Length: 104
Image (cartoon, rainbow, N blue to C red; front, side, top):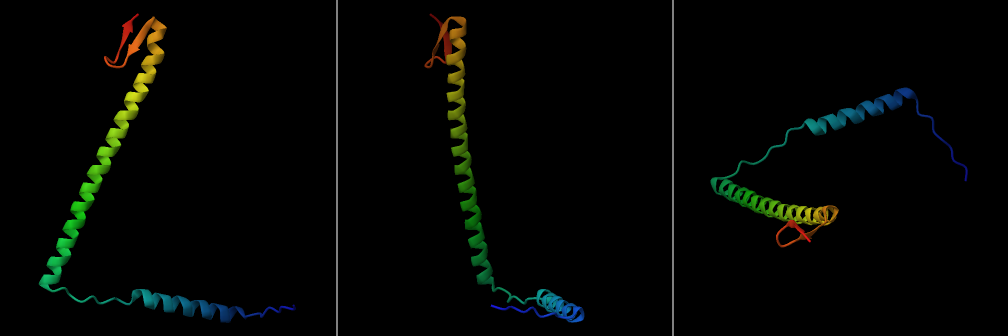
């Protein structure tokens, strides 16, 4: 297969790039016109956003509670592990129910 490349003059490329930029700039800068909402439509939109905000708040609170529970669980687990290692160093045993080292 014999491929040939076409050499485009530098001025043609410059003109093409300028035309492309001008076209894109025009498309981007054309203001869009949105129809104004009626009072009923505004009420519906506000109601929708209120429900979204409430749903977001509930989800955020639920996630915070889950993270707090997981953190508390991990903290207790690590604390018990530390005490199981520390108590024997002092000739004691760790009692999980009292969360303390007890003399043997």
